[in-house]
Image 1 (cartoon, rainbow, N blue to C red):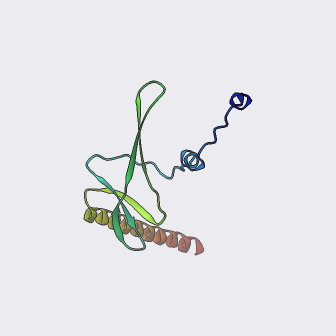
Image 2 (cartoon, rainbow, N blue to C red):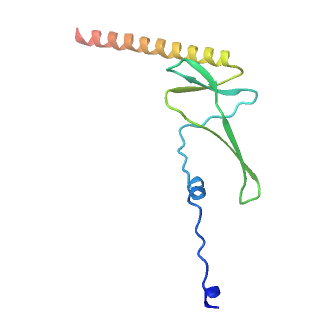
Length: 119
Protein backbone atom coordinates (compact mmCIF):
# COMPACT_ATOMS: atom_id res chain seq x y z
CA UNK A 1 0.00 0.00 0.00
CA UNK A 2 2.80 2.36 0.81
CA UNK A 3 4.20 2.08 -2.73
CA UNK A 4 0.95 3.32 -4.24
CA UNK A 5 0.76 6.33 -1.96
CA UNK A 6 4.10 7.80 -3.09
CA UNK A 7 3.71 10.28 -5.95
CA UNK A 8 5.26 9.33 -9.23
CA UNK A 9 7.88 11.66 -10.65
CA UNK A 10 7.24 12.63 -14.24
CA UNK A 11 10.50 13.11 -16.07
CA UNK A 12 10.19 15.22 -19.24
CA UNK A 13 11.73 13.96 -22.44
CA UNK A 14 14.91 16.03 -22.85
CA UNK A 15 14.69 16.10 -26.65
CA UNK A 16 11.15 17.52 -26.57
CA UNK A 17 12.13 20.09 -23.96
CA UNK A 18 15.15 21.15 -26.02
CA UNK A 19 12.98 21.63 -29.12
CA UNK A 20 10.44 23.63 -27.11
CA UNK A 21 13.13 25.85 -25.56
CA UNK A 22 14.89 26.55 -28.86
CA UNK A 23 15.68 30.24 -29.01
CA UNK A 24 15.46 32.39 -32.10
CA UNK A 25 17.28 35.65 -32.68
CA UNK A 26 15.71 38.30 -34.84
CA UNK A 27 18.11 39.24 -37.66
CA UNK A 28 15.79 41.33 -39.81
CA UNK A 29 12.13 41.99 -40.49
CA UNK A 30 10.63 41.73 -43.95
CA UNK A 31 7.12 42.33 -45.14
CA UNK A 32 5.73 39.32 -46.98
CA UNK A 33 4.85 40.45 -50.48
CA UNK A 34 1.95 38.64 -52.11
CA UNK A 35 2.67 36.88 -55.36
CA UNK A 36 6.44 36.99 -54.83
CA UNK A 37 8.83 34.32 -53.59
CA UNK A 38 11.72 34.92 -51.19
CA UNK A 39 15.04 34.03 -52.83
CA UNK A 40 18.47 33.91 -51.22
CA UNK A 41 21.43 34.86 -53.41
CA UNK A 42 24.59 33.09 -52.25
CA UNK A 43 27.53 35.41 -52.89
CA UNK A 44 30.12 32.61 -52.97
CA UNK A 45 28.35 30.48 -55.59
CA UNK A 46 26.41 33.35 -57.25
CA UNK A 47 23.27 31.25 -57.37
CA UNK A 48 19.73 32.14 -56.27
CA UNK A 49 17.78 29.52 -54.32
CA UNK A 50 14.23 29.53 -52.99
CA UNK A 51 14.02 30.09 -49.21
CA UNK A 52 11.67 27.93 -47.16
CA UNK A 53 9.31 29.98 -45.01
CA UNK A 54 7.65 28.32 -42.03
CA UNK A 55 4.21 29.65 -41.20
CA UNK A 56 2.86 29.46 -37.65
CA UNK A 57 -0.62 30.45 -36.50
CA UNK A 58 -1.35 30.85 -32.80
CA UNK A 59 -4.38 32.00 -30.85
CA UNK A 60 -3.69 35.04 -28.69
CA UNK A 61 -5.05 35.86 -25.25
CA UNK A 62 -7.83 37.93 -26.81
CA UNK A 63 -8.85 35.02 -29.04
CA UNK A 64 -7.53 36.54 -32.26
CA UNK A 65 -5.15 34.55 -34.46
CA UNK A 66 -1.50 35.58 -34.52
CA UNK A 67 0.28 34.77 -37.79
CA UNK A 68 4.04 34.40 -37.82
CA UNK A 69 6.35 33.62 -40.73
CA UNK A 70 9.98 32.59 -40.22
CA UNK A 71 12.85 31.99 -42.59
CA UNK A 72 16.26 30.51 -41.87
CA UNK A 73 19.01 33.16 -41.94
CA UNK A 74 22.39 32.30 -43.44
CA UNK A 75 25.48 34.53 -43.54
CA UNK A 76 26.86 35.68 -46.92
CA UNK A 77 23.40 35.50 -48.48
CA UNK A 78 21.39 38.42 -49.86
CA UNK A 79 17.61 38.00 -49.62
CA UNK A 80 15.26 39.45 -52.22
CA UNK A 81 11.59 39.08 -53.16
CA UNK A 82 11.09 38.16 -56.82
CA UNK A 83 8.73 36.30 -59.14
CA UNK A 84 11.37 33.87 -60.39
CA UNK A 85 15.06 33.00 -60.03
CA UNK A 86 16.14 35.07 -63.04
CA UNK A 87 14.51 38.24 -61.70
CA UNK A 88 16.06 37.63 -58.27
CA UNK A 89 19.52 37.52 -59.83
CA UNK A 90 18.81 40.69 -61.82
CA UNK A 91 17.64 42.57 -58.72
CA UNK A 92 20.72 41.58 -56.71
CA UNK A 93 23.03 42.49 -59.59
CA UNK A 94 21.34 45.90 -59.96
CA UNK A 95 21.61 46.59 -56.22
CA UNK A 96 25.29 45.59 -56.12
CA UNK A 97 26.11 47.82 -59.09
CA UNK A 98 24.28 50.72 -57.43
CA UNK A 99 26.18 50.12 -54.15
CA UNK A 100 29.56 50.08 -55.95
CA UNK A 101 28.70 53.21 -57.95
CA UNK A 102 27.67 55.10 -54.78
CA UNK A 103 30.88 54.09 -52.99
CA UNK A 104 33.03 55.28 -55.92
CA UNK A 105 31.22 58.62 -55.97
CA UNK A 106 31.72 58.97 -52.22
CA UNK A 107 35.46 58.26 -52.54
CA UNK A 108 35.79 60.87 -55.31
CA UNK A 109 33.98 63.47 -53.16
CA UNK A 110 36.16 62.65 -50.15
CA UNK A 111 39.35 62.96 -52.23
CA UNK A 112 38.23 66.37 -53.59
CA UNK A 113 37.53 67.61 -50.07
CA UNK A 114 40.94 66.42 -48.85
CA UNK A 115 42.71 68.01 -51.84
CA UNK A 116 40.95 71.32 -51.18
CA UNK A 117 42.03 71.42 -47.53
CA UNK A 118 45.67 70.53 -48.23
CA UNK A 119 46.31 73.67 -50.34
